[in-house]
Amino acid sequence: MFMVKDEFASIKNLLRVRIKTQARNFVWFFVVMALILVGTLAGTVIGIIRSDAVSYYNIGDYSTWFLVGMLAGYIIQIAMYRNTNNKLSVYPQTNNSRFISSLLFNIAWVLTLALSVVAIYLIKYGVLSLFSVFIDNIHFALNFDIGFVVAGFFVYAAYSLLFVAVAELIGVILRKWTYYAMVVFTAATSLLVINIMAVIEHTPSALAFLIHEPSLTLFFIKAVGLWLVITAVSLVINFFTVYHKSRNHTVKRSAVIVCIILASAIMIVVPLLWSSMTEDDLNITVSEVSSWPVADFFSEAEEIRIDISHLPSGSNLYIEGENINIVATGLATVFTAREFTASVSGTGSLEMIEGDTLIIRFLPPFFNVNGIELFSYANPRVTAYLEGNTLYIEYSVDNVQVVIMPIWGIVRQFDCFRDRGLLPAHILGYMAGGRMNANINILVE
Image (cartoon, rainbow, N blue to C red; front, side):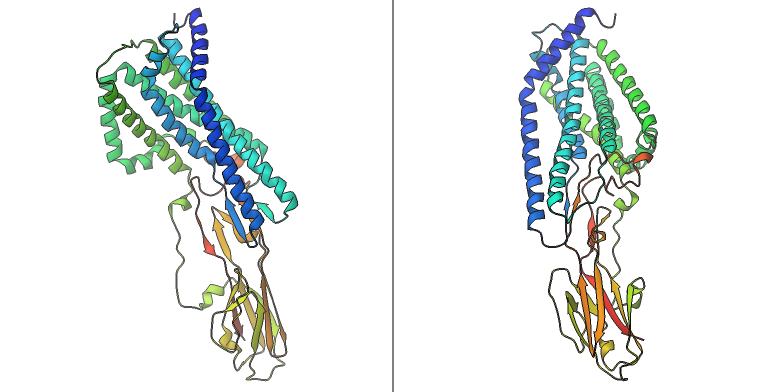
C-alpha cells in the first residue's frame, strides 16, 4: 500500500514541526519585506512631494526577483534535506511522510511569496492613489485591474510550483541514485553550458506548449497536469528510495549537488525569462547623429504659420520668449528659464527676410521609459505670434509625476491581458531614453 493511515498523522505532525522550526525565517522575511516596502514607498512619496518638473518613478516588480530568490532558497533546502530529516528523526515518519511534508511546506512558501507580492503591490497602489486625490498631477502609467491581479497570482503560483516540482524531482533522483545521477547531471550540465546559445534558442520552443500558451484556461490545465505528473514521479521514486543515515563525504557531495541543481535551474529560468521579453528588449536603437539642423528632422513636426507679407522685404525680426534656448547665432537673445526648454534653431532666416510666410516647426520632447511615453502625460505645447518686428515664442509643459508600477512581469503571454496597459515593455529592469527638450525650427517661405 502506497500510504497507510498513520502516515497522514505523521505528515501533519512533520509539517507542523517544519513550520514551527522555520517560524523565525518567516518572521525575518516579513520584516525585510516591510523595510523594503517602507523604504521604496517613502522614497517615491518624497520624490512626488518635492518634484517641480516632469518626473517618473519606476517601481520594481518584485514577483520576478522573488521567483529567482525562491529557487535559490529551495536549492539550499534540497542540499540540506538529509540534515533536516536527521533533525526530525525523533518523530514517527516514513519516506512518504518526510517527502510529502517537505512538499507541503514548500507549497506554503510559494503561496506566502505570491501573497506577499500582492500585498506589497496593493499597499503601494493604495497609498499612491490616496496621494493622487490631493496631488492632481500624479498619473499611473499602467492600469489597475483586480482581475489581472488575481489571475496573475494563480499563474505566478503555477509557474513557481512547476519550478519547485522540477527541482524536487532532481533532488529525489540525486538521493535515489546519488553517484550515478551526479555523473549524468554533471555531463548533461556541461553539454548545456557548452551549447548555451543553442539552449537559449531552442528551449522556448520546447516549452512553447506552456510558456507561449495564449489561453488562460488551457494554461492552467497544462500547468496543473504537468505538476501532477512530475510530483507523482517524484513520489514514486522517493517511495522506493532507501536512505542511509551515514555516508562519507557528505559536505563535498552536498556542495556538488547545489552546483548541479543551480546550473539546472538557470537553464530553465533564463530561457523562460528570455522568451518572455519582446524582440525590442534585445536590440537598442541608437539615433543617427548628423549636422544640425537637418530638414528631415522636422519632417513630422507640427507647424505654426504666420503671415508676414505686410513686412518690407529685407526686414529683420527679433525673438523673445519663455522657456526657449537659442542654439543658432543671429539677431536674437538667449533665454534659458527652466530645466525643460525648447531649443530654437534657424534664427538666421530672420535676418533680411525674403518671403510671405513665417513657419515655426515644433517637435515635442519624447522620453520612453520601459515602453511608457513620459511626455504623453505632460502636454508639451508652443505658442508663437508676431508683434511688429518681434517674434514671441512660448514653450510650456505640464508638471506631471508618472508612476510606473508593474506586477506579474512574467504573466504576459495571455491574449486576455494584451493591449490593456497592464504590463511594461520589459520583464527585467527597464530601458529609458529620449530627449527632455523640445525642438523648434524657424524658416521663411
